[in-house]
Length: 279
Figure 1 (spheres, rainbow, N blue to C red):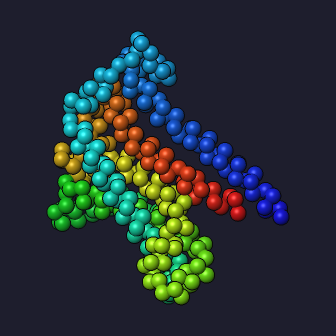
Figure 2 (figure 1 turned 135 degrees about the vertical axis):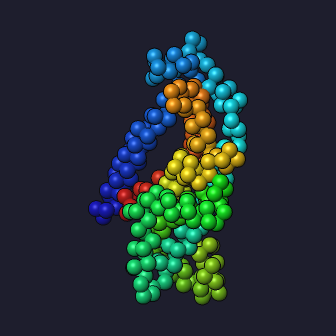
Figure 3 (figure 1 turned 180 degrees about the vertical axis):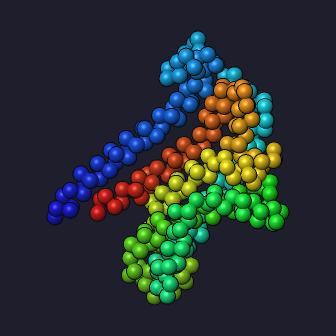
């Protein structure tokens, strides 16, 4: 009774905390966007003020569209992010289902092994990864980025999804087996729809680091044809002079897809994060 009575309060508190963190996280984004529509002087003089008739300027966006192939950079980032995200969710969910559903010798050790990637940064193996991609002929290809980002996102995906997979009713899965459903159909038709909040949570936490990453595109795919949007924005940053109008304009355009995908997944994301608070 006590748990049922207090669960709405916990839910409201969890949503309030999440809303507060969202506002704090979005404030830098707000500053970047409003300054992208200002003249260079206004960026440094009044960085927190909204653009007005005197400070409004589109010179940054004009520079971005004229210098470099920004649409190509955007396309590369989109392909790498979407394909990597699909592979992380698919393979992560399948591995999590296997760990949660089937008990075998070494199950716990296998789960621990897959979770080690959360604690050990993949960037520590940059030299070995570069050598492996060079030997495979994958340098300056989007495939190299997709493989690295998939490997980077799988540990967190398996760790989160396996906990949600264990909460799926065994009776439901056994009923599917009695009806003659294969394990693949049970996984895709019965289990995946029930863990959508967890999938959305993994999608958001996986998508943002991939889209914003500069390290691996700089190391593995620095060619003009394979540059991502984050790496492409670096052309406006010089050793002695930085075109801040163009940098802020490029970042503003780069933020839009992330915000759109965040809004798409936000409802499921909130359900996934707060699910433990309403039990």
